[in-house]
Image (cartoon, rainbow, N blue to C red):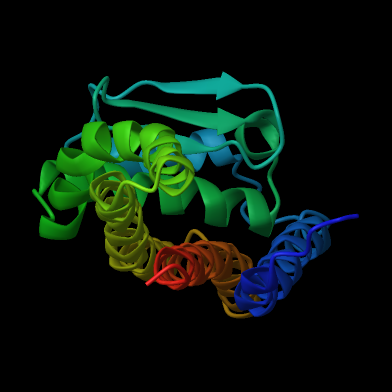
Length: 226
């Protein structure tokens, strides 16, 4: 007979939101990838321009494979843009490039939530790998110390996801202000870029909700044998 874990129901709303967010970011990016910017700048050109204007001329802009794999690496101080964004001159490409520049500016200005997030990355990497191992081992062995340790480690993952939210929202806010104030995008173009970045932000909200739901599920599972 198959065993059904009823606590999985706790995850369903968050998983639905996560699936919707992934669809939304993909469809919105694809839509505004077809809107060529009036100035014709590519994502790489915008990133280079904004970095230089922010005193970050030492940060290289590299192209990487994949779709929506764009990120700023604070440890190596490198911006990496996907091919669509690097070479693209669409509203979507420029919005994403500016967003990643926002992260570089955060790093330079020691934006507190970013510093916190970067500081706990090693802990989170460890926690995400070992929290479930400890939790399951504790359930099998009936050792509550291991169960509690697993929950505590997973809590670090939740904290990381929550701290990520202001980091991402702030980067988008910086990007939109810069794009508008410097005349890189105009009117409807700015609104289009905002929709792309808002859709991307929802994926981080969904990730936070999923991690919170998972933590609640672990706590419920841990109390079954009480």
